Amino acid sequence: MIKNLVIVGSGVMGRGIAYVGATGGFDVILVDVNQAALESARNEIDSIFEKGVRYQKISKEEAASAKSRFSYSSNLKEAAAAADLIIEAVPEKPEIKKA
Image (cartoon, rainbow, N blue to C red; front, side, top):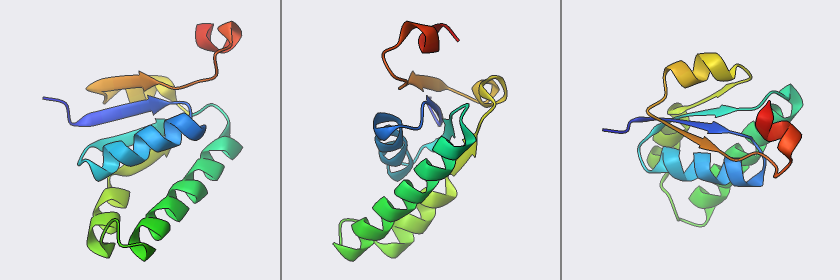
């Protein structure tokens, strides 16, 4: 049974996948080697939750519960050790995908 998701890449796609995973009840680790990108993702995801509550797409309790299932990391090896499923969402650039 899949419980722990690791999303590699904190861009638009990675953020969206992570949000859907957390609201779907999964524990999510969003991974990116760029610390500034992770912080930007954290801020954007917080904003998505706030908008969801404001527009009554998600309750405050559901948002708080989903946010509690989120964590962020720049260490892929460590994050992958806890993963039941890893989803890669990095730019389509061979040099990035090989790293």
